[in-house]
Length: 224
Length: 318
Length: 84
Image 1 (cartoon, rainbow over the protein chains, first blue to last red):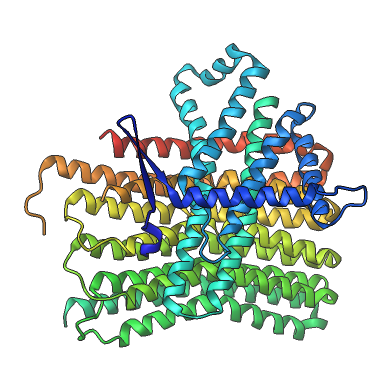
Image 2 (image 1 turned 180 degrees about the vertical axis):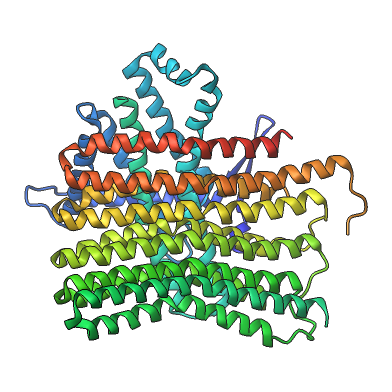
């Protein structure tokens, strides 16, 4: 169990303030960024009208998500599509990273996941202000009664908690289960199967859910 | 007779008693629907009989885990210095007993709907049976989680003198036990509806299977949360200071994530069931249904996530 | 077991226990209810796929309303942990 709780921290002293960096998460995030850049390089190199394999995969993914954002956002979709697509690819590759030996998912750390949720939250609220105007946006918090204001605010904040802890709980839960089961059985068949199930299957579904919920919150802000 | 043995026997009794409820009701439902189906289609009664026995055998596996755990509790050796304490043994019994409830009931419900499907369309029997079997296997996952936690509690190690640690072991069993109920029932409901839909449109079999599996994977989330918290509770350090608030925090933590998972598990199963029915009606729109289902399930699960957050906050306060 | 239990410790203990009970039992209803809403939305979309967007939005608004009881539980639990 020490594997889960063990932290690898860099403490940096800046003008008398201590900054603690979670080094493991940081390095894993760099690896994820590297993998994505490498894939994009493969996909765009020698791009042609008859697509090669990497280009084909990239185009398929882009088209599927383009259709999805167009459908739920409408005419403004062009400004939100890059955000949704980036979120999906980042979370997907992060979740898959745990399947590689000696690497771990950056999404196992709440410090990665919470800001991702926060980005979607801020974008959705900024959109809401832009579409409705500031006055109607604020007025929305006092509906249906004036007294509901604090509960409405907490209801909005709870969305950030639920979207980020959903991803964190699933990935962290999977990681803990894999470690405990590997220690229990000392078996070469079961842990790789669990790795595949939690990394590939659950990881893909949760990445899709994360991107789609971000999209849904934005589309609700536009259409409500 | 000392307290360790007392706790083990009490846990064994509750384990088998609670563990028989789900499978009992579920297999009863299966038998009832088999009889109804035979009444409509007497010509295929031998196929119905075969499917009923297969379905009931899978639905029963959760209560067989209960039997194994209660046997381990009854015949365990508690005189050795490395024997577990009373709280761990009682917790192991409750964990497997409660954990078998949902999977047994869900497995039985799945088999019942599959039998109605076979009665309606005997030609698609093979496809219906395979959807049912895979769906039931996924619905058994929460009870396997409970089984793992029970074994960890039974073989986990020596008795401790720390009452917080003892309570944490008991609560880890309870949280996994309760947390398995919702996911087991929910996955069973979706497996049943998917088998039934296969009988209506056998050619959409692979789409139905994939929709069902995605839906079930999401409805397992509460059980995964419960397993995570119960493992964290098992590995609470021995050295925590004993205070009344910490004791209450441990109890609250287990109850929050365990009981909080029941509703979202069942609800997500409902959503997956309806999505499977929708795919059968209109297979070309599969991705639209899966998308709606995933969004709906994700929102329906937010209360389980709040329960997880409260449990993690309480765990930090120990 | 405990050396001595003071009144404030007792209050703190019951507050923490209450927080767990509150969030645990409070999560059951919204979970089942919102799942129902999601299921019915799927059924509605299967009947008229052209209204998928409208139905999804209606589902989300309905779920948001039925989630409010879950959020009340969350608020009460957080108050019990951090304020009492």
